[in-house]
Image (cartoon, rainbow, N blue to C red; front, top):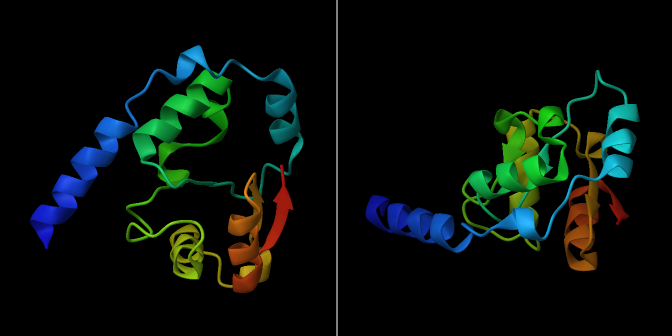
Length: 127
C-alpha cells in the first residue's frame, strides 16, 4: 500500500514537472482581484495536480505570495480522487478546517467540478 502511494507520487511529480513559465505569465488583473478579497478569510488552492506544480503555477502568475504552500490542497490530500468526486471536496473542506460546507467558495473552469462542489454544499463560480 505504501509502495504504490510512493510510486504514484513519483509519477505525478514527473508528469507535472513542466515549464509552466512558457505558458503562464504574471497576471496583474488576477493579482489585484485576489488582493482585493477580505484578507481575514483564508484562501486555499485546490488542485488535481501536485503541490509543487501548483507552487510553480502560482509563481508564474505572480500570486504565490497570496497562497502559502500550506494552503495548497493537492490530489494526495484528497486520496488521489479527482475534483469530480464529492469525497475530494469533503477531504479538502476538512483540510481547510471549514466545518460548514456553505463556508466554502470554489472558483473553477470545469462545470463537472462545480457540480460536485455544489452537491457537497459549496458555492461555486465558473471562471
